[in-house]
Structure formats: C-alpha cells, structure tokens
Image (cartoon, rainbow, N blue to C red):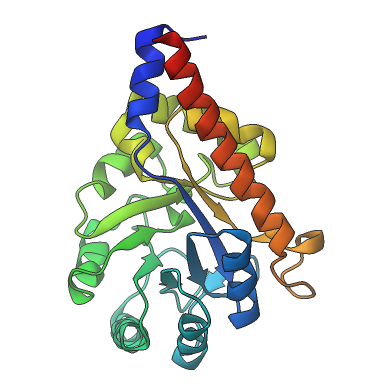
Amino acid sequence: MGSPDDLRREAAAVTSRLIEVVALHPSDAENAQAGGADRIQVCAWSNDEPWSVEPAVVGAIVRAVDVPVRVTLRLSAGFTTQGGEFARLVGLASSYLSAGVEGFSFGFLTPHLEIDVDLCTSLAQEIGSTPWTFDRTFDHALEASRAWRQVRQLPGLDGIHTSGAARGMDAGFDDLLAMATSDPAFAARVIAAAGTRPEHVPWLVRARITQLHLGALVRPGGSWAKAHVDVGFVRSWRRLLDDALASLTRSSGAAG
C-alpha cells in the first residue's frame, strides 16, 4: 500500500471518469445511456475493426441520446489513408458535425509503424476545434513511449484508446500500468480499451486511469452481430468504476 502522501496524490489526480460505449445503432446507444454511459462512440464493426458509418445512422443515434457522441473516421483496412480517401474522410467529418456529434475517433501510422504526425495533424486541422480520440491504432505503433511523445502534441487530441499492446489488455496490462504510473499526463489521456476485465479496474484507477472504452464486453456473448448493448452490463461497469474511485478517495481520507 502507498504512503499517505502517495494516496492523497492519487486521489487528487483523479479529475475525470468516463464510461464510453460503442454503439452500432440507436438501440445500442439508448441502452448504453440507460446503463450509465457518459459517452457513445459510433461505428460499424467488421473484421474485428471499427469503420465509418453513414451520416444518417449517426444522426439517428445523436437524436436518440442526451450524452455526447463521437464517431469513427476510417474507410479502409490498415493504418494509413491518402489521396481521395482523405478527402472523403473530411467530407464525412463535416456531415457528422452537421448531425451533432461531439467529436471523433481516428489514428494513423507511417509505414515504419510510427505515429503519422503530419496526417493526423492535417485531419485534426480539418475538423477545427472538435476534440478527438486516437484510436487503437496507437497500440500497433512500434514503441509506445515514443508514440506517446508524438501524439501528445497533436491538436485537439484529448484521449487515447489503448490496452498497452496490440493483442489486448491481457498482453499489455502491466506495460500500460507502468507507463501510466510514471507519467500522470499519459494516464489522464488513457481510455482503457480492448479486453479490460473487472479485476483490472481497481488497478487502473490506482494508476489514475479512470476512463473505460467498452465494446463487446457489454454485449451478451460478446457478439457484435447477434446482440445489442445490454443495460445491465453497462450498469455493472458503471458501478465497478465508481466503486473503485470511491475506494481510492476513502483510502486517501483515511491516510490523512
């Protein structure tokens, strides 16, 4: 257990909490909000990857909920985009903004598996002051600490979907905790994603990671094709995160 000063610093560093749930359609979004989600991420799901959806779908989801909605900007497999596809992404972003989205999720790498700073900056500039999340492309970068140094300066970026490794939280959990513990600025941007298990949450919170991104974990059987977001599943994660934060706060108070 940490010293009293450590506990007080940990509690003071917790400035936000977020449950973000992936929605494929309005009923997903409605169930997520009913379960206590703070934000919705909209995408299509195919070949284990998120994709951009038609603006009409985004508009229907925005109208269905009161919480902020972010949407994926991605039109092809791989870690990059170029030429005409980039122009299509800009056009989609404009349509999504007209539909009322709060922000976006995207991310690009160079052929050498480093953050494509130029490409990400170009798209960020196209969306103006709209906030955005770097998607799990981040976990495919060659070296995580270098990737973090590169993304932290990108305009408008306020979060990173990461599990610490391309293979998910079971492979990357220890490395993710180590980076978060050594760098509070990184911890504040992390939105824990891909394979987070309930037993991870108290440890994530102690490392000042207080944002969770939930996809298959809140769908019965983990199915993207045959199940909708389950209200009870979302509510369970809501309680789990809130209880972990409350426990940290109590520990800090007792230490004082």
